[in-house]
Structures are given as structure tokens and as C-alpha cells.
Length: 411
Image 1: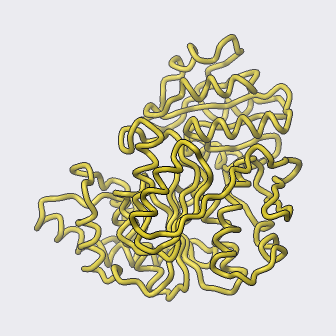
Image 2 (image 1 turned 90 degrees about the vertical axis):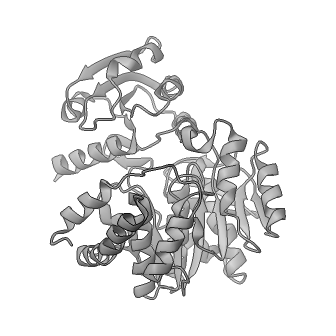
Image 3 (image 1 turned 45 degrees about the horizontal axis):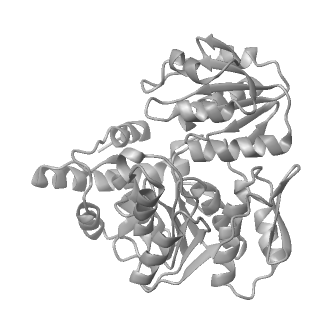
């Protein structure tokens, strides 16, 4: 048992997998044991490579505006650990998070002793979130997958609707090396007679069609709006002859928002476009194309996200772009940098406190003839970024660290 939240979180974050998950037996058994297998609230389940967080936030705002009590479970966090679990737009309070971890802790210890197995971090946190929502008697919960879908720890739940956002290359060591293999894993969240909403992608539509047919699930394939969305200070796009906008910049946000619109109209057929727009206008996510003074912060940590980021930057026609960049070793920084070269004029590569960080020398073969500078700290990188337009991108942990430093320096 833990007396302080930081000790409980440290225990959680150091929980590792013993073996690669091959089924959902462990999380299912634990959910039954803890009383969060049969849930008394409606769930919307979201998988995808990019856009899960934005889509979840749009849906969360919409349901709140309709007067419902809403739980939101997302990952990773940007500012504070508690933001992974929200109730009516507020982070889970420290005392509730500590109480629930302490409630679950002895059950986890006993289970591990009896089975000679280890229960990983994400499974435990998922149980914490589901218990919290049950105890708080939410009416809806929006549950975001961690990685994949088919074998994701969240996939024992039965939702009222499923959403799969964009499909791209990420976590190939877990999900597969082709878009079809990745889509097959994401399609694992499709449940019997539960509708699926997704974005048109000719490379993977057949995967979703086959899985939906197998589960007698109604399939809604929405148009890809990235080629028609327009940017000014917001992102504008058209759905069913009505022009919507979101404050979140990025052509990809048109697709994320359209998923919310389609789901909302399915669940609440009489809702007006004006009411939906009112909810869309409240959108905000830190470090997702976030404008912070002269900086653009975006945790585009895989090639699919970076392509969309570059497309947005090209649309905005920003000149003399400086990029502060750092990646983790398991990411395809070679492909990412080749894409960023289309818009970046000058790179700054700082060190930051993560043992998984890529050595900056590894970036050099992939930045073409661009000017660059290697520095010892994020603070030094920020002080060197004199251009009016500076992009901070790379791993989400890196961008989050930069954001916290900028917040402190501006306060």
C-alpha cells in the first residue's frame, strides 16, 4: 500500500510485461475480480494510429454539452499523469487515483504470486479508469486503445460504437509491417452488432469490410477530407454541405472532427449542425499543433503523423522554419527527417533526459544540406531559436518536456 501518489505512480510506471500478450484472459479475469467487467455505462471505443486523442476530445466535449456525465481515458499524458483519466473534463483527483491504486494493488500482488505472471502498467491503469468511472456513475465513457486493438488491454469491453481513426506505420514490432497487418489489428475492436466509424482508406477498407461483415456490424466509411480542408487561424471543412471549423490546426483534424460528427448524428439524430459546431469550437489539446508564442508544438512521433504535419505547414506557407527535434531510438527518424526537410530550414538537436533518446549524430545523414546545431540542453535549444517560426517536434515525451520548460519561462 502507498502513502503518497508519487510512490504509487512509480510502482505503476515500472510494471513491465513478462511475455507478449497473446489473448485477453488476464485483463478479463482481473476485471471480473475487481468488479469492472460488467459496466453500467455506455462506452465509445477508439483505435487508430493517429488522431485518437483529438477524436476522443471532440466526442467528450459533445457529450458534455448535451448534459451527460462523461469519463475519458486517453494516453499518453502531456502535462500531468492524472490527465489520462478525466471525469467531466477534470483530471482524476490525486486522492482518488491513490485510493484506487491502493485498492487494486493487493489484488495484483496476489494474482502475480498465484500465476507467476506480471500485470503490466497499461492493464492496471485501464482497470483504475474503468473502476473510477463505475464508482462515479458516468453515463458515457470514451476509451482510447493503447497500442493496436485486437490484443489491446481495453478490448474486453463491449461498446455502443467503435471508431478507427487514421491507419499508418507505428509500433510495427507489435502490429505488423504492412498497413493491412496494422489495420487487421485495429479492426479487432469491432464487436458483434456494434457500428464502426472510420475514414476512407483504399488500402485497408477491405479489412474493415470483412471484419464488420463477420460481426454483423454496421460500417460507416467517411470521406477523407485532408485534401479539401482549409486553414487560416482554424481548420475549415465541409460535411453534408455544412461548413464546420475546429480551433485545432491541421488538415487531419477535419477527419478527426468528422468522426465525431458522424457518431453524434448516429446517436442523436435530431441534433443540429449549429449545436455540433458549438462543441467543436471548444477543442483544445496541448502539444497537438499547439501555437505557443513563436513556437509550434506537435508530438508527431511517426511518419504518418509527420506527413500530415508537413502538409499543414505547407498550407500555412511559413518561411524560414527552425525545428527543434529529438526522437526515441525505436522510431523511424530517418523517414521523419526526410519528410521534415520539405519545410525546415534549420535544425537544432538538443539532449534531453530520456535513456531512449537517439544520439543526435544519427540524424545527420538524413537532413540533406540543411544547417544544424547540436546543443546540450532543451533550454539552450530554445534560446537559440530566434526565428519567428519554430517547430518543436519528435517524441511526445520530448515535446511535453519542451512545453513545460516554455511554461516555466513565461510565468
